[in-house]
Image 1 (tube, rainbow, N blue to C red):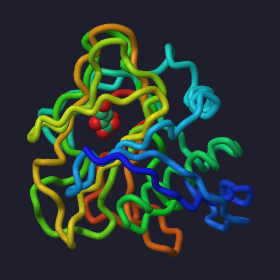
Image 2 (cartoon, rainbow, N blue to C red; image 1 turned 180 degrees about the vertical axis):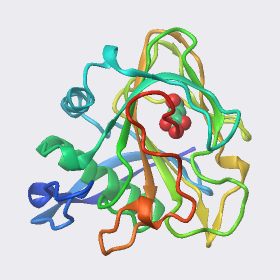
Image 3 (tube, rainbow, N blue to C red; image 1 turned 90 degrees about the vertical axis):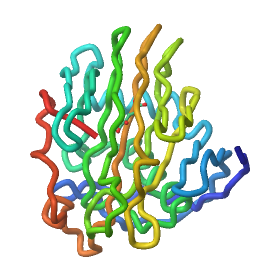
Image 4 (cartoon, helix red, strand yellow; image 1 turned 120 degrees about the vertical axis):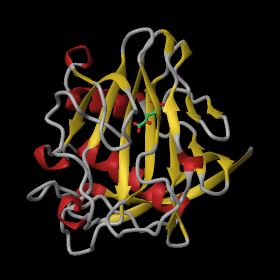
Length: 258
Ligand SMILES: O=C(O)CCC(=O)C(=O)O
């Protein structure tokens, strides 16, 4: 594994305010530089762990926006990759419905870092909500699945091309994220962010991007997942762009999946 420090131009998000349907204006009033330590777990398709990405303060803000973790809805996934199974509690954060400076800054940094590491042109506007998930009980897990298509087919504009997972709490035992085909185990610490991409030269990656959240053996884990799409710059929403729309947006009840 290669670990190095990258400098990321991060946006000053003071002008990033919710506007309309799930929108966050991409008009920044300036930029600054962040030095981040990144471990490259795999070069292609990329898997990278960004160390100490999220502060305790930011995780607390996410928790506040997602609502009380203990009251989250149980999400038992099925659908996109039939047979996959998720046992956790989750809630979505819709940027359009909040005007929170901490969240806006956090989200913009997430996109800045993901753009820098993957070179994909992904921007906050028009994206899926942030999914906050709690693995609360022993045995809670997310079985092997792909977040987008992973059959190596041609890229369809508007589909998911990358995922980031911020670990706001890691389990005392178990709960690692594993890339199942290559048996690559990620051992994050609290605050780290995992990024992986699955678009390579106009084609989608294969099963090597399949991943899972291993069962929690002791303690609890909670994460914030962002799925990235290359959405059109005119601010259209991802749902109107995707040729193969995923199932209806979660209501915070059953059926939320990655
Ligand atoms: O819990 C994990 O480690 C994996 C989560 C995941 O696969 C997802 O949110 O898509």
